[in-house]
Amino acid sequence: MDSGRRKIVTEGGNASFFRVDVTSEDEVAALIQHTVEAHHQIDVMYNNAGLVRMAPIADLPTEDWDFTVLFELTQVYYGCKYALREMKRRGSGVIINTASTSGIVGIPTHGPHAATKAGVIGLTRSIAVDYGANGIRCNAIAPGFVPFTKQTADLSNDPFIEMMLGVQPLKRPGTPDDIAAAALFLASDESSWITGQVLAVDGGHTAM
Image 1 (cartoon, rainbow, N blue to C red):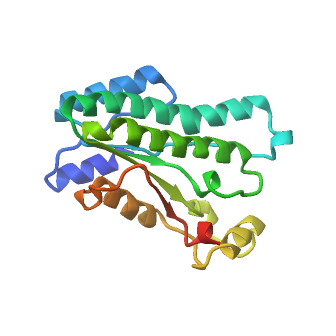
Image 2 (cartoon, helix red, strand yellow):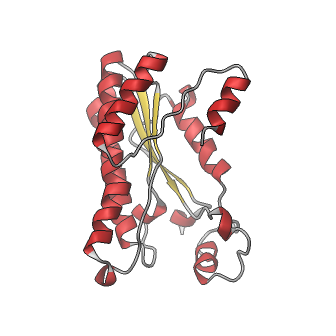
């Protein structure tokens, strides 16, 4: 995970790496403090971590629901909360939250994921309204089907993958680069008049 920092430093940049448990409010608060101490300010906060346990709601253990809410919604609240305090002090900043097409349209077995990502979308819009006057923008990215590395080995024999590709006008899975391009746009001044929005990067899934 430190390879990104080393690459930036090798190319002449300035970067730090902190290992953080994003489900710990104290560790997230410390991350913001360390970042400000090391780099003097926070221009962009990208809440992109997540981990989910999925099943049809009637079959979902309560502990799996609680786990998903913690990893997919509560930790986003932590990141936003402490980044906002620093950004408000400076009078500027950008927050990007990772949502999902599951928070926009129904997908089989995605109940807990859908609930938390819909929560992220609502949180994003509320922050945009509450903190726009402080020069802070907040938007969300809703990725569609972006396979894990192990899934890309064979995209033809998995019924779920076939189903997801079947509801996309663009008949290919997404890639991490597709999501990164959206994040870079939302972090840049090119999106300086965009806030409170959900950018679906999904091959057209949510247009169906």
